[in-house]
Image 1: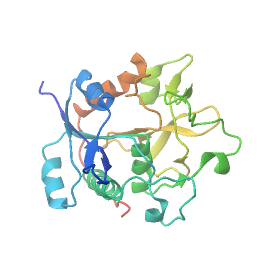
Image 2: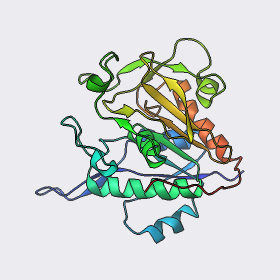
Image 3: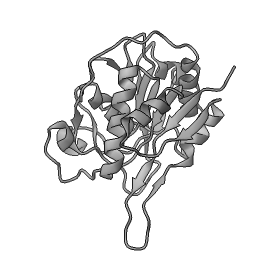
Image 4: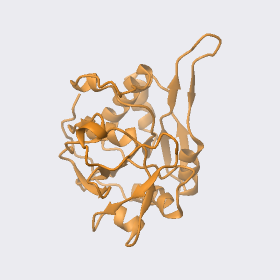
Length: 249
């Protein structure tokens, strides 16, 4: 079987003093896809929608990587003092990508802020700062531990249950924003024991779309974490008919 070709976005840094602008991506993303049997292609940011659609005609799926925060002002909310927006060039590109991908029902896997973008693109909302919005929640961001891990409770019958099964589950999840209202096209399939949403999956049979707030590509990831990429790649081998749907601008 021909290996699926899966696109990846990347982080972006503007030029500063003697440092030119550049894009960067953690190796765990493309290493995980390659181990899962896919060909990974990093897609540079562009504002040309026609070019993006031409590229998407050649891709079998897309993975949105983690990064800094989405700017809530783009979704009609005020900027919270703790929000550190990603570079505008990346965010504009990411939002256009997700809108086009959702419209054509391309298989997609959003990780970290990628999951948050998947949710808001389809009409969901976000908590801007967990300690204020959900004061009873456990700490979801340890400033001294980039591999911060906490337990996970998965939903029966989901991809997450297929990956993790039963028993004690711990994942690397480090964030201060989280999903509030879930977009209608998604079901919550994993939560932290405090109730914070950690995974969503499309409830439409015609679309392979999953998101994890935690990072299965991280250096602290377990063998079970890596199986999420395997499930995503395997699902791409069984495409379903595309059905049009109104997508949030």
